[in-house]
Image (cartoon, rainbow, N blue to C red; front, side):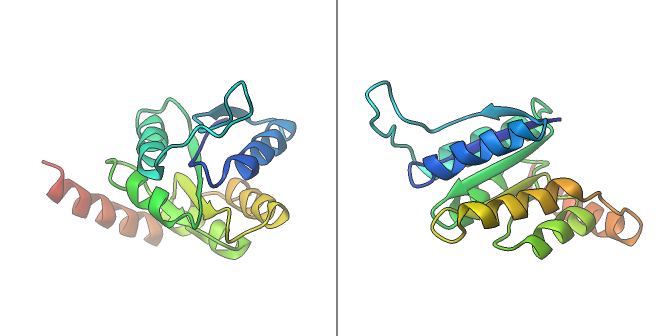
Length: 154
């Protein structure tokens, strides 16, 4: 499974730790940045850029899922959700991460580096990637979300 990771300059260290964690678990991780330059300086970027970039990678099937991190997870997920076909959810604890996959068929998980620590972020990823979309009545609701999106994406 290919997982795209993106972050702004507030979340580089957490993103890098999570890429290593998920790689160890056998996932193929694609790092969309941002990162440090060759001198160890932060490459600054605005979170909407990375939200859009990872969102487009998920929507085009370049990657199967995305992980987005900024200060709170909110701004970067808002940007990703503007990409048709993206269902990005901000989750700051494992229960919501599992349910957003099971009930909402979320294809991007987002959280804040200033909100969750490394170990909690790992638990969030474990729950999200360990869950499966349940379909059924939830598919009807996900289809309704797609209908709203289609209405405004003409």
